[in-house]
Length: 451
Image 1 (cartoon, rainbow, N blue to C red):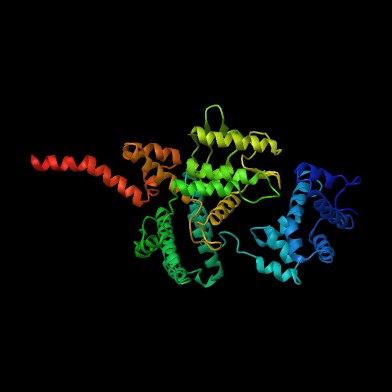
Image 2 (cartoon, rainbow, N blue to C red; image 1 turned 90 degrees about the horizontal axis):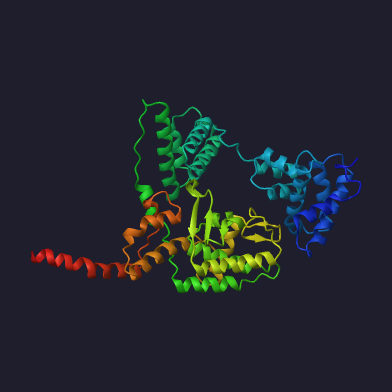
C-alpha cells in the first residue's frame, strides 16, 4: 500500500515545476525525491517509521553531512504533499511539535543518529509558559501586545525565566523575590544581572496591576548602567566607506546566482540611503516601489508603522536597474512577490540571510574581521545615515534641530527621542557643531557682555 496515491508518478515533477528551481539543480532534486517516493510506496503512511527506513537506505549512498544538507528539499516536498491533500500531516512537523524544537534540521539529525529516541529526547525543550508563573506571564505579554507594544525582547526574557523555573521545580512555592534572586545567581555576567533587574521590574509591576496592595519593588540600576557603558559604540561609515562597500557588493562572487551581486548592491544602497532595517529590506515587495512618484512604501514594521519614503534620483536609478535585472532573471512580476528575490527557492531573502550577506560584504571590504562578532553591524548603516545626514545639514547651513522631527518620521520612529539614540558624535560632527556655535552663538555672548 502506497503512502499517497500517485499512479502516474507526476507529483514529484509537478512539485519541481511549481518550485521553479534552477535547471541544473532539478536532476539532483528529482533523484532525491524519487528515492523518497520509492520508500513511501512500500509503506502505508508517511510517518516516522517510513522516514527511518528512507534515511537508512540513503546512508548507504550519501555521506551523512551531505545528506543532512539536502533534506531541506524533502521538507518542502512534504509541505507540498500536505497542501495538495495527499498526506494529512508532515511527520517532521509533528516531531517538532512533540519535542518543541525550533527547526527541522535537528529533527533529521536526531533521526539519522545511532540512537534516534535518545537524540530526540535530548532535543526536548520545556513548553512555553509551563512553569508555576506561566499563566501569569503569558497573560501579561498578551496584555502588553493588546496595548500596541510588540514586546518581543521582554517576552524572550520571560520565556528564559520560565524555563529556569521549570528546571527548578523546588521554587514552585517560593516568593517572586526568591525566584528572582535564584535566577540572578544562575549566571555571573553583567548582562544577565541587568536582564534580571529589568525582568524583576516587569514582573513586580505586573503583580501590582493585579494586586495594588503589593507595591513594585525598587531595583538598583547599577548593573544596567554598567552594561550600557560597555555597549558597543556604532561604527559610522563615511561616504567613502559606503562607496567601498558598494564596490565590493557589486563584485560579490556568486556564480550560481547571477542576480545576487546586484540585489546585494541595492540592499546596501537602501540600508544606507533610506536607513532601512534588515527586516524592512527583506519585507519589501515589488509593488512597494513606485517608479512614478520615486517612493518606496515600508509596511507594518517596528511599532506597527507604515511609511512612504521619497528617494533621490540616483537611488531610484539604481532601483530601476535592479528591477530590470530582476525581470530578466525570470523573477515573478506579482506586486506581492519579494523585491529581493533569489531563484534557488523562488522566494524572497529572509532577514537573517540579508544580514549575513551584508556582513560578508563588510568582511570582504576590510571593515570587519573574517570571523567573530566584533566590528561593524548591518544596523550601523542606519546609524551612519543619520550622522552623515546631520553633518550634511550643518555644511549646507541648515539647523539640524529644525529637521529632526522629519528625520524621525523618515526613520519610522515613535518620537524624536528614539532618533536621538542614533546621533553618534563623531569628530567631523563635533567640528561642524563647534564651527556653527563660533559663527552664531559666540557673537551673541559678546553682545550680552558689552550690554
